[in-house]
Image (cartoon, rainbow, N blue to C red; front, top):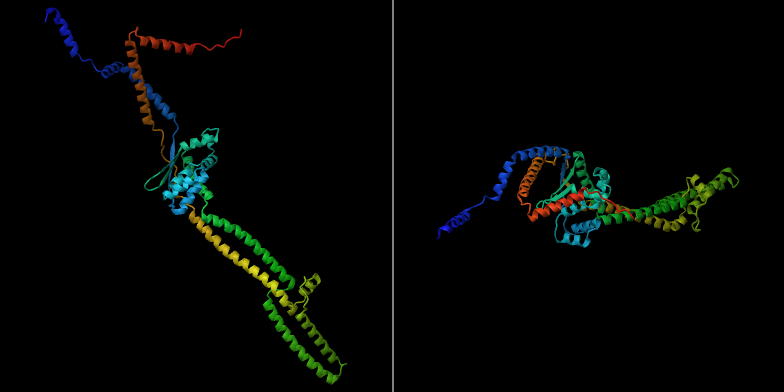
Length: 436
């Protein structure tokens, strides 16, 4: 190799063996040189973050754990279809999903808790438009949904309801109100077969009650008009009384014949015996009555019957009174029997309806939370401080690399041009064109 080429070879060998320092080490050294500035930034960031996290309001969470009842077979399918109808979902889809599986109503209860009906009731009960500073109910409902969390354990099926609020007592009350509104919604939308049966029997019971009252009034009117309370007992009493009167009349006639033979027709005792026989005949006539058709008793006759305690049911009218009285008595008895049976069925249907309605079994009732759930002030202050230090480090490294770029570099020239343009947009006031 010639002598004049040796320095070039040595230089090339040195350049081949040269290893520049890593970029991260260069940046780390740069930050170390500006450690004083970064420490100032860290202190200021810590103070500002501490003030900021103290301004953030505390949030409390109240939880309730509930166990939905087991629902199987057609009852679960019917109730799932009902819930789909109440919530505006696909009824057939909910019915098919219930028939294909799902032995509990956990998913159903979650949909009910998230329904618009429950949200509207919660907004009205706690005046959430004012609490959340919202103008429209839909915005308040969205804010409520963000503060409400409903989870279901896949293994046990237990539902966990969590409500967040800045007031611990209101958080507890809202969680309890969710459970109350869920029960109310379940009862209102229940459409089981037992409920339908109960509603039908209830309407039928009212109708039968009206028929029974009308039959009793007709029976009472008929008995009051014709003095027919119990035809069999009254007829038996009339027959016994008539036999007694006839016996007395036979004795009186025998006594009259004896007195006529002794004293003659003009004797006072004979006339007294004749008057006694006349009274007995009149009494028998009243007992036998007439065979004329039934007529409504007039006021005078009714008053006479009320004044005469010895009045009897006419025997000749018993056959005429027996048929309408028996019809009225049978109608009253039939209506009473139907009313009693419907009353028993109504009570049974109410019991069955109560069994068919799924009730919410609360495992853990909501309580007033003792500790806040948000914000974690120490963690937030530390995180914000680290963000401030990181931002300052980016500024230091970026500024150093920006100064290291050649002023003639096109990239720097383009960046300066953009910066100047944007700054001009910021400071130049807007002017309106003046019409010429």
